[in-house]
Image (cartoon, rainbow, N blue to C red; front, top):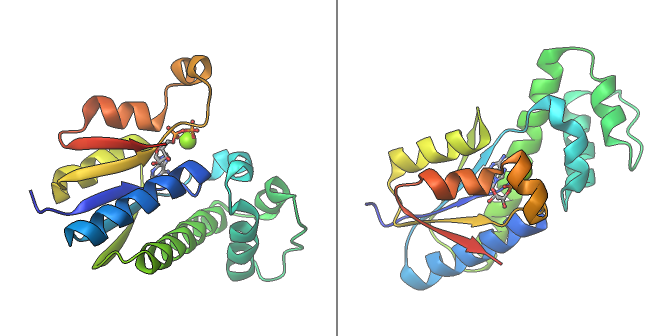
Length: 175
Ligand SMILES: Nc1ncnc2c1ncn2[C@@H]1O[C@H](COP(=O)(O)OP(=O)(O)O)[C@@H](O)[C@H]1O
Ligand SMILES: [Mg+2]
């Protein structure tokens, strides 16, 4: 156990709550904060619309990845469709991931968390988070709650449920 506080973020309002709680733990305990995000699958692009900061992120990332693209507000799925190659889509989700992590680190720093590390991960959302936790061995991990209702999330299975079921460390759900 390294004593670090780990938090998994996906850019949602719920994940922001998790981030704030983790930052508070870090500040109060003097524990390092480790913020992780697993890159979105490009084929789930439409779900980005559910993100609190989704629109801005996508537009910012699009400016980096596809400078010529016509980026119209509220049409994120179209932005993704306008990316021509798979490599370009991958650069896009990576750019979005980096932006999410940068913003999260700034937000946590403002709340007094220190030191802060960020890590962009790749793979199955829950498995990548669990593997990182196995490596880091944090004293605690903080996640947001699922935005889906109880029935839907049972059917679809959720990232947070999988993390809760399999993590070896204490997992806290922010509400
Ligand atoms: N791609 C991701 N990277 C890191 N953490 C994630 C990711 N997706 C989900 N999580 C974590 O799981 C929490 C709940 O999300 P999830 O179970 O996916 O609910 P929903 O069904 O509403 O998307 C998030 O607040 C975050 O802590
Ligand atoms: Mg999700």
